[in-house]
Amino acid sequence: MATTRLPSAGFSITIRIAVPADASSIGRLTTSVGEAGAIVTALDVVDSDPSNVIVDLTCDTADTTHADQVVEALKALDGVDVRKVSDRTFLLHLGGKIEVSPKVALRNRDELSRAYTPGVARVCQAIAENPADARRLTIKRNTVAVVSDGSAVLGLGNLGPAASLPVMEGKAALFKRFGGVDAWPVVLDTQDTDEIVAIVKAIAPAYGGINLEDIAAPRCFEIEARLREALDIPVFHDDQHGTAICVLAALTNALRVVGKQLADVRVVVSGAGAAGTAIMKLLLRQGVGDIIASDRHGALHRGQTGLNPAWQWLAENTNADGYSGDLAGALHGADVFIGVSAPNLLTGDDIATMAKGAIVFALANPDPEVDPREARKHAAVVATGRSDQPNQINNVLAFPGVFRGMLDAHAEEFTEEMAIAAARAIADVVGEEKINPTVIVPSVFDPRVAPAVAAAVRAAAQNPVTPPPAADPGPADLPEIAATASATP
Image (cartoon, rainbow, N blue to C red):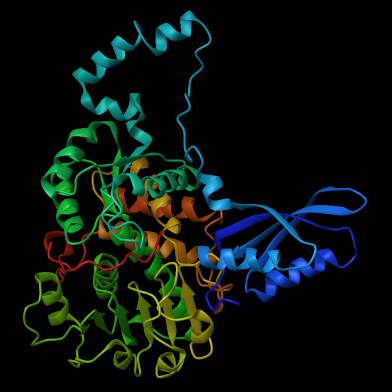
């Protein structure tokens, strides 16, 4: 009955159970849960009498089917009465995860007159005379719109705006928790590029930045490019740039662990969609030795026909040896694998063909491209997007601090220099003296991360450096990039 998938807190359940009041009952419960492949995380006694004990048993399971199997295993035990099963994830979402709170007290008429009419009219007139004062006198200075059309929700596909709202709420909560940024979900009941651009332009005066989220490729590239051109506030597509920043940070430290230089390694990237293209663009700008980009139809290479413009650019500027085979073949002798695609594409045997000191970032969520337990048998460093595995590469390491820095600097755009500065800051938080194969990125709860990223981004915004001339991969102005499943939350 045990599952082969990894249990996760995302499928945590609490089961209320009545058992006989004898010495072996509790042990039988935990043993049954363990044999079913789940992980017991808490066991609390709720009530008791001379003959029975009522307990709440909390455990992590792999998915809803596995959770049902665990419950059935408990029901099959003699003397066990399963009374209630609660899905802890759904309980957390009841009523939503964010709210609006006033920053000023409204205790009497005097305070009301200054916060609202008639006093507020003077502030309105001041902003009308000098629109730049909106940053100083309104929420604009610290507020971000989290915009989605629900067309690429996590790795689940086109679920629509209402179904995307729990993700956008979560994003807003993370902005506040880690960056002190007031963010609000803006989910749009349209997937028309022109309409999305028009709507975001229309609401932009209230915000200091725009975070695009879970918008499918290729439209996400055109939407971002047009909004960047039209607005005087930063536009940041987290599925692209947040992922790329975190991968560069993690790779910086992973290479330190194995004693290799970026300029000397060959990287294989599975997934040439939004996240994969942004990762490859950033690595190429940083001087990576070579990259092979692999998508549904195998490796992109020179001489291929029928490619969209972005894939054509990748074919011409990566894969120096012209490899034209499948993903598993591309790994032979490779130093680094980065997966931002789909689950279970590779086996441990495939990882075994990589170079000595191999680095594996299998970031598809919730199930990675290769089982991390198998990958660790052959690779020196393994990372995933999962919170229950070492080396979680999670965008929350980047976007709260990135926006904090941009807002503090009153930045009008997000730049590549900011991305590189943010990646270096994340990597350096760990410290060269503390990195090891299981610690290449800091914890998302490390209080040093967001301030370090914010400071680095603020410095990059205030002291921009002109980059050396380089060919532009151009995902921002090449809208025809095929969609690939998002790898990170």
